[in-house]
Structure formats: C-alpha cells, structure tokens
Image 1 (cartoon, rainbow, N blue to C red):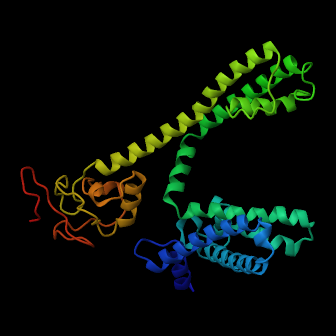
Image 2 (tube, rainbow, N blue to C red):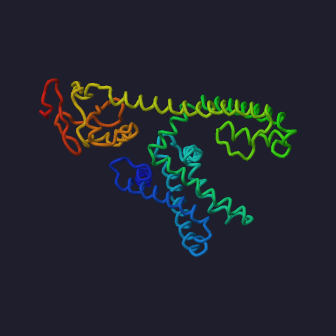
Length: 338
C-alpha cells in the first residue's frame, strides 16, 4: 500500500523525468481550460439549448475527474514531510490554499444534489465552477511568480488600499455635501456618491454621474488628479516586486561556485545551447523561464549556480550531459571540451 501511495504522490506531483505525471498535468490544464470555456459558452442560449446534453455530459466527466484527483491528492499527501500523520497531516493539507481551491471547484456539482435549492440559486452556484481556473496555479510557474510578488508586497499593498479607502470616503462625502441640493437623484446619499468616487479615483470616468456646480467641478478635477496617483501607487509597488524577484533569480544564476565533488572552479563552465544538466533540469528551466530566458542563444550565455539548485552535481569531469556536451571555457582558450 505504501508503494502504491508513493506512486500516486509522484504521479500527482511529478518531477521532470516523470513523463506520465507530466502528461497528466498537461491533461488537467487542458481540462481546466475547457471547463472555463464551457461555463462561458453555456450562458449563450443558442448553444445551451441544442447542446445541453453535451454540456451536462462534460460537466459530469470533469467533476468526477476532479473529485478523484482531490481524493488521490488527499490520500497521498502524507508522503510529503509537511503533511506526515494519518489524519492530522491530511487535515493540514485540506486547509491549504490549493486544496481549498480543489474542493471549491467540485462543490457546485454536488451541492444541488444534497440541498434543495431555488433554480436561480443553482445557476449562481454553478458559476462557482469558474474557481477551477485557480487550479492553474498548481501547474503554472508564471502564476506562482505573480503570487510571490503579491506575498512580498502584501504589507505595502494593504497600506495603499487603506489610503484609497480613506480617499474614497473623503471624496464622496465632500461631493455629496456640495452637489446634493443641485442633484438630489445623483448624489442622494454618501453611499450613492461613492459610485462617482470610485469611477473618478480609478480614472475610469463613465460620465453617468458628474458634478454640475462650479465648486463641485473644481473639487472633482482635483480628486481626479489625485486618482491618477492612487492608481500609479500599487502599480509601482507590484512592478518593483517583479523587478526584485527577477534580480534575485538573475543573481542566483550568475553566481559561480566550486564543484562540490572535486573543488574545481566552475566559472569556466556554461550551459551550451539547449543542453541542461541532468538532475537540475526542471529547477533550472523554471528559473530561466521566469527571467524570460527561453531560446537556445539566451541560455548559452547563462552560467549555472549549483548552490541555488537542489540536485546532484553535473558531471563536468566527463564533459557530457543529458542531451549534449558542456564546454570548458578557459581564459584565452578556444572553448572546446578537453
């Protein structure tokens, strides 16, 4: 049983050499994308009527597949050191973000079977199937990259949100007192004026509500200018977070170390073309793609930092890798392998 559970764990969380696991990941990503597409197309009456049976069949297949996936992940998660323990480990896993996303993605399928609901409420619950889109976070390096940026800048972003809320309340309250008598329908209360405040501070400017008094227009212009800065502030924080992480990853890849086996200076070794060291291929590819380095010519100029990657040391002694050769670049040399 332990061997079977370990096999399932590696199938659900495959390494780069696990081709079956990688194929399963690709299938799940495609299934998620088709599920989102089906939810969108199902709202078209010209399609939902004639092809209702196909929509229902696809929903049954997808929901049952994702249910089995969730059960297998929960069953095999104890192979991860973070979730050791027959029942406590599984409970710890079940409250993780990705596990909650998995259960939220399948609940809309089962809730109408368990609880009697109004048809309109059933339709609203079925829209929660769009949560399956968040399952992409488990398979996409880019989404993980974006998530790490928000985690790193969460305190600054929360402070910015707090400032925006204060500005919204102040702007809406001021315009309410200035415009209420002139436009009782548009600025009937502060909550109604907040719609104008949101539209103005975000620089959208729908034009459905706007001040007509001289003082109101003057204040509205000032608030609109402040709104430009309010929009730029979180954008700048997120951009700086992206830049920091990219610089850190670039530093990890550019720093050189000695060989952990023989102590030889590895500064003269570089990745040639698309050939990547065996044992660190997956981690290295993620680092390179996150930096925007995808082509063979770009990879050729990137040097490998062994201390930043978990995995066995590359066999530079034999001058071979999984897919090609590693050239030794000595100062003044020809760059040919010895």
